Every structure is written in C-alpha cells, then in structure tokens.
Length: 388
Image (cartoon, helix red, strand yellow):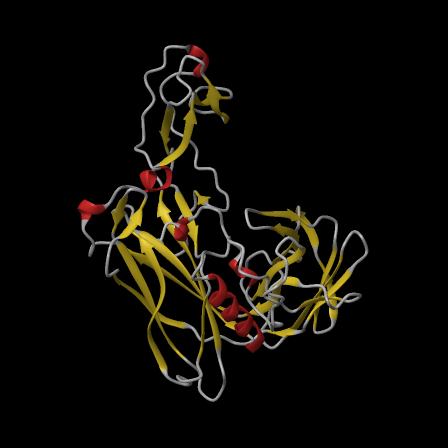
C-alpha cells in the first residue's frame, strides 16, 4: 500500500498492444530500448517517451533517448512530434485521438536506427455509470503504524455483441497543508517593490548555519494545495464471460486514509485493443505480485515496436491508442475511524511537522512565511475538476 502513494509517477500510460513471447533467459544486463505512450481522445498533452534501460540483479538505470526523429501516422499521414524535454516527444498542441482512427508510431534514433510499431485503431469505450466507496476490510501499513483505507468502485454498462478490453487508471488528489520543508535553513519570500502589494521573490530554503544540520522546519501552504498520487498497478479486464451485461462493483483503487480531509479520485476507464490487453495482462501477471511498474520485471516483455533492420532486438513497452471515459469522484472518509488518521505530512515524511522558531536575523526576513504551492506533476494549486 505504501507504493500506491509513491510520489514518483510511473508511466502507466504505456498500456496497449500485441505482445511477443518473452525469453525467460534474456539477460537483464542487456541495453534495452523502452517506449512508453498511449494516445487518447482527451484534451491533454499527447506524449511518447523513449529511453534506454540497463538492469542487473542489483539496480536499474534509465536514461532518456535524445534527438530522435519521431512521428505518428494518422490513417497513414505523418504527424511529427517535438522533443519537449529529454526523451519526451509531444504531438502538436490540441492533438486528440479519434475513435475509429488508425495510429502507428515511427521513429529514428540519433544514430540512424529506425523503429516502427504495429497499427493501433482507437476503439470506443462505454461511460462510467457511477462511482462509490466502502471501507477497506482492514487497516494498511504505513511505516511503523497502520491507517484505514477506502475502496472505490465503479459501475458501467458493457456493450453487447462485441469483445471489449478495459484498463483503469486514476489520480488521487489530497489536500496538503505544508508546502516546503527546509533542512538547516529557513524559507524566504521577499517583496519586490512596495511591501504587501508588489510581486514576490521566492528564494526558497536559505542555509542558516546557526541551525543544527539535522533540524527541519516546515512551512504551511500560502494557498490551497493538493498533492497528486497516481495508480501504480495494471488493472485490466476482458468481457469474455460478461459481454453485454451491466458491470457492478469493479474495484478501481484502494486509497490509504492518511487524513480526515476529503480526497478526489479522477478515474479513467480506457478501451484497449486485444493485443494491448494481452500485453498488459501478461505484464501484470509477471510483475504485480513481486512489485510495481517501477521494479524490473522477471524478464523484459517485448511490445509492438520493432527494429526495422534488426527484428530480433527486444524493444520493451507498447504504443497504443485508447478512448477514455472519465469520472471525478470526491470521497469524504466519514465512514472511517478518525482516531486512526496520522496526517498526510507524516505519511509522506515519516515525521511530525515542526514550525520554525522566531527569526532574530533580519537577513531571513520578517515573520515566519508561508510557502508557495508550486505546481508540478505531483502537486497543484488548482482545485481538481469535480472538487466542488
């Protein structure tokens, strides 16, 4: 359960496609090309990530693949991608996938090696009918203590007369009260211009040698702030035995209840191709019982990308396209025991927050400041859709 809230977001969006049988004797010390990316019909940035991975019995190292020439064929017409950050290639702003459209990934490395995926057609997905929560059957371990947890379920209507392959993923938004922690230092924000009316200069944590090296000071958020946690398990399903039936009570998440404050789960229900389902089902069977997607699987799984000049190269990952049904579910935790909550800050840092002592040195500014909520992949200062 601890890994469920790992702040390191795992690219679970690698989901989709057909899969080659893996070789259980493949050496994990091999230099593997890893491709992650799934195109959707959502109004969000559409990206493909390319990297090189080296693994052995003790560690794994991943490095971005720079300066590749990447394009996606949309019904055979090429759309180029640009490298937005090292190893991450982005489709044009505003690009959205469409149901019934065929997509294929092609790229060439800086060394001139060309790769190509199979063709993936975006399939429709039914909407989520409703979501609801119930207390988890038992408390879950967090460090040296336990906390209650909430199970969140969805209902949906499976379409009749067609095979459907599903994937679920989610983002959990939790209210954060503390936005900065300084070790042997103090958080400094200064006014630029008239005090209280001008812009702010954020210096962040500034070293203070009068403080012992092991001392932390923690600073409350200046405005509303949410930490974001992502699903780290592969949750797939095929309707072989339930075709056309109303699906009730599919559990999509078990969320540890670190605090009494409400949370919001942004749920995504994706359509997969048959090949994508087979790939991720095999991936889950291999990895899920031994770790998370961050961990090295027992053997690398070849996806649907191949080296055009060397078909024997094992390329890990999968390029796919999926339609997405979304559902924002806000849960209150009122059905859980208040006495068991430890607070989000303690759950993340394994210690209680410590307020800064009064400032005597004017170099660090006036009163103890609050800290800015700096948005990023795991934090936002904007209320998530559906919060109200």
